[in-house]
Structures are given as C-alpha cells and as structure tokens.
Length: 348
Ligand code: 1HN
Image 1 (cartoon, protein in one colour):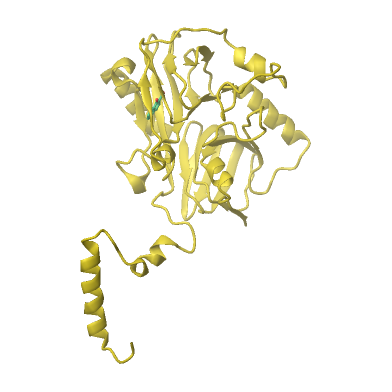
Image 2: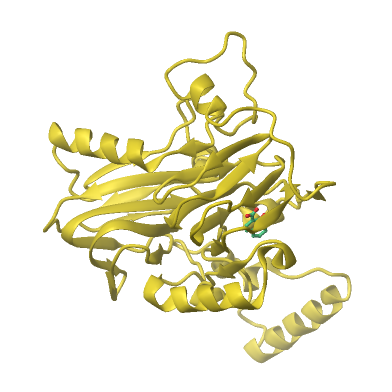
C-alpha cells in the first residue's frame, strides 16, 4: 500500500463506495467510531419545565379543545435536543394531561405501557381493564400494555397528571398495536380497590395468574403510602449520599420493577441535603412533589419547586441541593437495560 499514492487510494475508495452504494452497501470503517462511542452518546439534553410556565398553557388548551375531541388532551414535554419527535429521552415519552370536571377521555388500548403521576387536583378516575381508581396528587398509576383504559372527571376541579410512555422502545421493536374500544367508556366489572385488596396487602389469591402479565397487578400506588414509607425509612436509616432515601416501585408478584419497560422511583431528600454526584445509563425524568431546591445536571443548574418536571440524560452527572425537605418521583427505561445487562451507574 505504501507504494500507492494517497490521492489515488482515496479516489479508488470513493469509487468503490459509489459502486457499492448502488447495492445498498457501505464501508463500516468510515462509520465505526460513531457506531461504537467510548461512552453514552444521546441527543437528549438536560431541561426543566416549570409548572408555573406550563399551567397557563394547560388552562388555555382546556378552553380550546375538549378531552373527547383531543382523545387525550396532553402537552407533550419535548426534549430540546429532539424537538418534533414527541420524546423526553431517546426512549421515553412524557406529557402533562388535563381532564376537566365532567369530561371523559375515551377508552382504547395499545401495546405501549403508560404510567400516570398525578400532579394537581383530585376527583378524576382512570379505568383499567374494568376497574376504576380515583386519582390524588402524588399517586403513581399504571396502565399495563394492551389493557383498555379511559379517564373521567366526575369531580369539581381540573386534574393534571404526567404521562410516561415507552413509545420509542415499542417503536424500536416495531411491536406497536392500537385498538379503540367500541364504546366511549368501558364497563366497570370490579369494585374500586379490588386490585389493591387482592395484591397490595402482602397477599395474593391462591393460584392467581398475573392479571397483567409482566406488569404489576397493583395499578394505583397511592402517595399517602409512598410518603409514609419514605418517612419511616428515613427514621432508622442514614440518607444515601447520592439519593437521600430512595425506593423503587415493585411488582409484588416478582419483587422486580412494577412495569417491564419503565422503572419508577420515589425519593426523599432532607432539608439542606447536598448530594454527591451520580450518573447512570438510564436517562431519567423527575417530577417534583414536595419541597424545593436546585439540581445540577451536567453543567446546567436549575431551581425546582413542586410540580416542575426535569430530565437527566444518560450518563450525565446529577447533583441535588434541597433547600427544604424534598420528595421527587422519577422514571426511566432501567428495566430493559437491566434485562439486557447494559445498565451501569457511577458514584462520585
Ligand atoms: C395515551 O393513550 C394516553 O391513555 C396518554 O391517557 C398519552 C401519548 C401517546 C400515545 C398514547 C392515555 C399518550 C397516549
């Protein structure tokens, strides 16, 4: 090769590429480094959506379109690095959904799994596979894959929640299915609290087959219980230097994550807590429940208060500074990464 002039080689290569290209074939050596970077690369950027900014848009959307006409009246939280792609990280979708008193959001089902984290208001319900559950702020609610679900607000105040869906993950596998229920509202076939009674008290019906497959049979994890667990945990255990007191929502039938594609967490940071830097490969979406302070994501510092949403991209160091006692809900694509042996974390 040394004897062949460089310009000749380079034009011969270009000529080879041109001929190969006609047969949908390309040289790996031109793209190898980009395909296998040394560390995680994502277009996902850090960002914080202030609820104070979002609330007027939510109110206005409520005046301009009904829940029924919109099917789902949601403001999509678009990652600034991926505008127009309806995602908050490269794998997950998030949005803020509004349902006004007297409204219903019609019943449908899809292979994408959804979570709801209630941000504001009470008195609305979501129905999953024949059972309704009332929503209250801080509740973590699951819509398992391929279960019919509709929402309604028989109460007297607007209810807003954050939706989290695994849309990009299901799209990656091209395993998307969607079906509309023949009526607007599905019939109620079990009493409210049935799922919690059957699976949420350390009991399970004898010989029960997991009603939602790989997803937890409990579909409402109420805030009152999560908050109490955090409080009791904090009484007799030191705060973790990176996470404060952090718990993951689990499937009582497996002990694993509550959803097969999305992990959900809740954590308590004591007042004046300054966390040690932490990074992990699951880009994570946070919703602030109580307290306030600031978060440093990579090189960006954001002040946060209750109902704000922020996103920490994969492998980006995060540091929390809690001014007051703070509770954060978060979710990520960790279950898939763990199942595939990909998940990594680094402290400090
Ligand atoms: C969906 O079905 C809901 O059921 C919310 O509330 C948000 C975003 C994309 C696709 C389906 C819901 C959604 C969604």
